[in-house]
Image 1 (cartoon, one colour):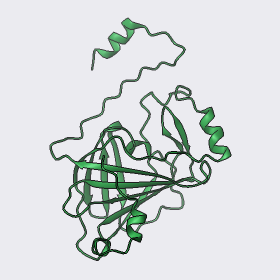
Image 2 (cartoon, rainbow, N blue to C red; image 1 turned 60 degrees about the horizontal axis):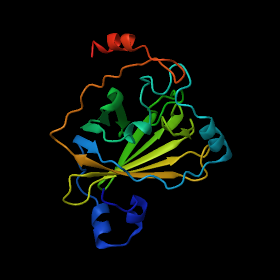
Image 3 (cartoon, rainbow, N blue to C red; image 1 turned 180 degrees about the horizontal axis):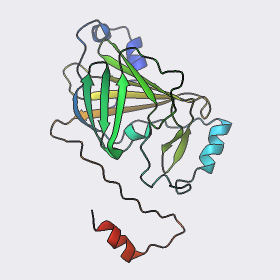
Image 4 (cartoon, one colour; image 1 turned 90 degrees about the vertical axis):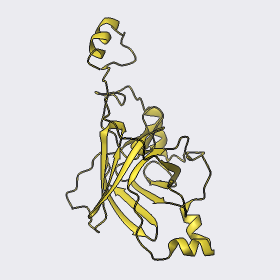
Length: 234
């Protein structure tokens, strides 16, 4: 993947290209289908707080009922940080809809200036509000249920987390650039920054996601005959 500068640094550079990119103009249309490039840029070091380090060490992806490998609903920001994944964007009146193939996940991003209601619940995907500035779409997500960044490694995410995504295109390109910042003061001493390219892929389709629950944990033996019967419908 071609490296690119953080958006905050790009905005701070005083150059003709930057001024042109931020100048008022027609709102871009990011509608279409994309494939998330892999690998993507992530922090070299995760600056855990004492609480974050405790949660990281205690993480067990096979614990719980069900475990994190057992067809749980996808959550933010994990769902857009998976490996190669397909995403479709549709721009509608008052909202932007992002449909991600993994987990049949559908995100609705409000762009009509609404704020979360006082009784807004904390959910896997949270409450997302977007705004346009020039050719950049900024999305802020709050009211997360909390969880982890990655099912296997862990890296905790608290309910107080603010996730900021920024999407933009370079002039003449169809690739969608993404910068994602996780501000979680409970688990990290400073924000975490990720960068990713979403490659334009009009030939791709967001297929239905079929997750098969194994209903197993590490300590259980696998019944091969039972597994065969359960796989037959697939």
